[in-house]
Image 1 (cartoon, helix red, strand yellow):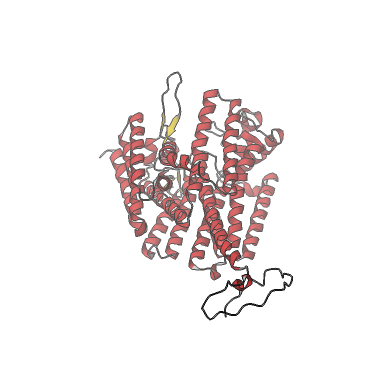
Image 2 (cartoon, rainbow, N blue to C red):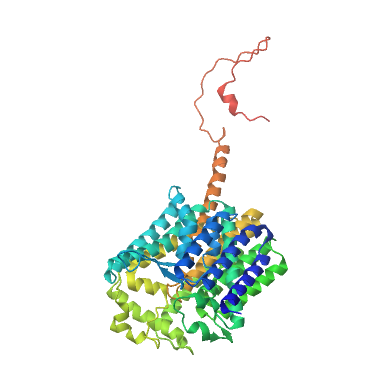
Length: 534
């Protein structure tokens, strides 16, 4: 049996298990997501010609997107990671080496989100959505323009196109398409289906000691086949291992939420939790584990903790960051670990701070050639910027980092504000309790992501998921705010009564006429319309 056929069979088995585990109410939509994963795997493993493969993927996504019960946007959330981005195709262009480099994530964005993006551009949005979108658009344009320092004109245009498609279009489309609580719930369900599929693929790869999705990538890294930790081959399914660990932890929280709403039986819930937990473990990614712990811990505090506990947690988090920086800049021996990963990160921070002081606003494009960074070059001949915040600020300065963090900060603060306005868990109605769980989950997922990018580079699908998490969070905030304002509007009208009206000066009036015997009704005096009947 050929390896390609075995790979497609394994993926089919993975999606079959997920189809069984997902709630029955989601079955038609889950079928569409699973069909996209199996079809993408079959095309990637069997069609060797890249141009034909991407044409086939285009047609497949268009057809399944049109037939999806919930629409193409929701299918995108469930199928955007069906193939690794290492599988690429350079679209030819007369007069140029190539037009653009196409991968599955870009193709899925163009096919599934393109029509909805055009429609969303004509849809008005609240100020908080516009401000986040404007910051992300500025980040795309700013980083693209700054690339002129070291890239030719055509490469700069390609980079702007890539960032626009992978950053701005998903955020803009998703945040404006999800308008109701049902929309947000379906979006999260679509993401859960993809998390479970990736967890199944990761678990199978670990048990078979074969990262079979590495086969379809253009450049296969040797570590994909022999990097082992804790007795298992490190796996990432179609994403990198650190990101898979975070997504698996988010999936565990979603399964727990479905179990709380009794939409998932205990047997299926515990089976799904076991699959997700095993996938998180076999990634062997310490940064991913830290992000997973932060995600689960934040959810427990936000959903179950009191207001006082939440404030205490915020203070503890700030203190931990301060202590961490103190250990880094005092070169503490606590940071010396067996593998040297922690000490390397500490040295990267110390070296980067010196460079930031020299180029604070716009950074430098020549980081890897600077003499001050050469001692960070590893055995593979690379300088690994394993901190997304440092990576952005070194290349694009505080202006680039500020625009990116500003977008995330606005989303997080808006979510925390709405969480504060929701009733506490014990006093909430069932609908309010569900909204509180959903908002707490999105805030926790967002917090876990912010922890994750402090431990890895801003590469592969890491940026994509950050903007999608932010988009769904902003959409949830919009839903809650719209509902709150709609409930407040009738209340204001009902509050208007005689007691609330200012007292008017007494006016002399003629005595009211007595009713005539003919049954004719005289006009009712104006003030009598406001008198409440007993």
